[in-house]
Length: 108
Image (tube, rainbow, N blue to C red; front, side):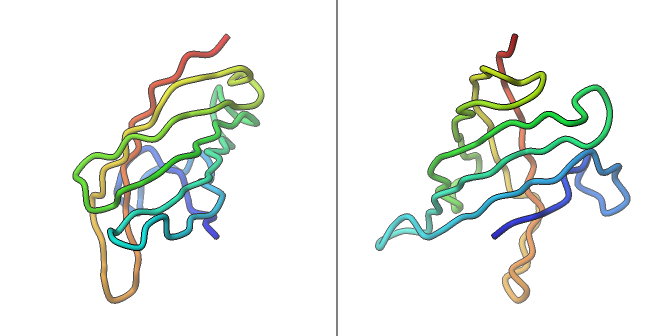
């Protein structure tokens, strides 16, 4: 399960604008890849109360991974698009990671 801060930047002091909530599971027996189901739930600013839903395969060893946006709520109702995920930092001991998500979305 994930319920992580969604921030403007990668620093701990970055402004929190929402939560990344969902789950992931192993998606392959032969490589390091995850199946991700995640909502980017916004709690601040003009997107407050809205969310984007990301569902897809995340091959975590690749430098940049692309996953589809399959919908959303609030101002993102009927949205479509994709996210590009890039790992900024990863601590193998604790499992903690900082991941940058660039979001490309069409919404009405």
